Length: 137
Length: 289
Image 1 (cartoon, rainbow over the protein chains, first blue to last red):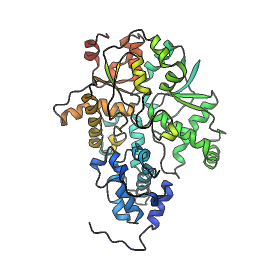
Image 2 (spheres, rainbow over the protein chains, first blue to last red; image 1 turned 30 degrees about the vertical axis):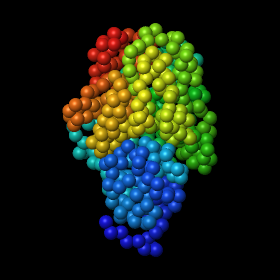
Image 3 (spheres, rainbow over the protein chains, first blue to last red; image 1 turned 45 degrees about the vertical axis):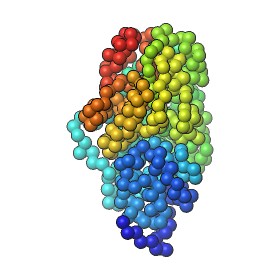
Image 4 (tube, chains in turn yellow, blue; image 1 turned 120 degrees about the vertical axis):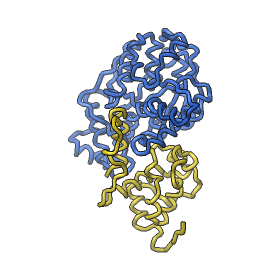
């Protein structure tokens, strides 16, 4: 993938918005990859959490929001617990979800009517309540 | 002594066996779980977006209501425990948010409630040594894997439950019951959590790795503290079996079910019919029934 960096893009409005929602300083990240190494769902991610943080820091909104990484985050906080720089990475992933869900298009990540029959009856309430909070606008 | 108790939605419906066994065990151990009045859903996810105050309102209201009845609040579900304990700490530390929340829910709660998990009561208030003496039917010969998951432990600075990488509390509990606690490297890994709504296949894969790791280390059963983990590692074993043909299902217990059995409760009252993988053959084989 060819990525173009410009002075206008680096740490732009998008980056600032993610930093504001997550309350984290993305400049602290030195790309060690500890978050990605410990992430239990990184096997299914397009790119690791540390790469998404880099995209975000460089202001590459399209690239950062175009991957499935933050949608797959289960907020288990393993990355947060192991980050040597003290960044709460799970908060950054949640902030990226919020950036998408708060846009006026309201593009939900899941569609409730598409659930298979009997799905809601089997699943514990805590799973779909927390799921809806993470995936619906 | 009685403990004010917040059951949570799932324990009232899909994890009734968890709730009932805990209440019955408490009586045998000499305390009562007193259900708090007017409880609601805790929201099931601590809001990670710092500006999302709305999601803090349900747990704050629960805390404020509970404070009117007592000074300690107990939970069983690890998710509720996480949400309520983290919210309590936020109310203690962030004066600005505390005022906003109190203003909205029309209460004056200052964060002066102690939030405890049932396992913490067993450890700190009763003690595992004393618990061991109260065990009537030790579960000798059962190799059980203590599965912590994420919610009890993380974030470490706020939960202060046990060590963040190698916790021991749950194993000590299982050993007090007479079982042989199995060590396995995936005991603090995530089960996939709410991804069973967003990406069910990913959650199945997470569960397979956890179960596989426990089985490889000799586990005959898994023990859980959370209805979400239990759904992913118990109910999803049917999906795992379809994908990995050589996978052999193992039963998953709530820790209170094993506690109840060791305390001599009638096996009929332990709600094994709600477990997805039938634990009866294993329990018969071990001579516990």
